[in-house]
Length: 132
Image (cartoon, rainbow, N blue to C red; front, top):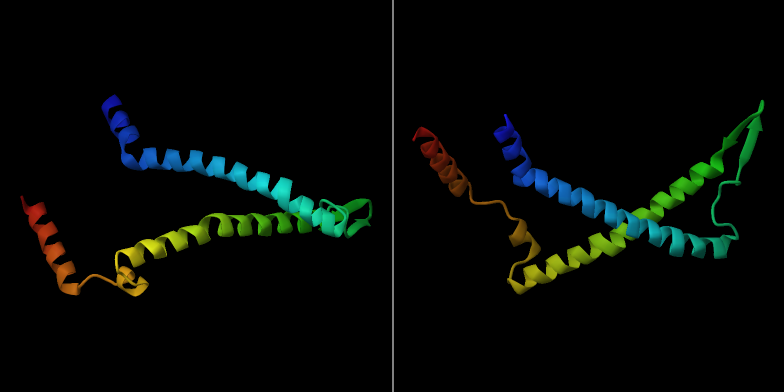
């Protein structure tokens, strides 16, 4: 029973997932700091308020309906998505393009599907392995 647990923990997928969660949390803190300390103060300088929480506040029968809080959350989401795209996704695409160009491959060649005959031969190889 303990051997099975040890084997499960030592699998590469579990370790990779744990590393991804830790790195994701650390990167989330960086993105949050960027949005909270740089982008939102810039918006506050332009608009005059650090958030939109008090914008379009309705009171119906003693219940507050806060459209501004939703607007603040929406703006924060868009800023975080833009920060991730421009700080992570776009630079990684450029690096991958440069690596492909260095290898002499175009994007189409790099993403081409394998030869169907090769796929059949791989299936035959796998079936032969299973027969042993």
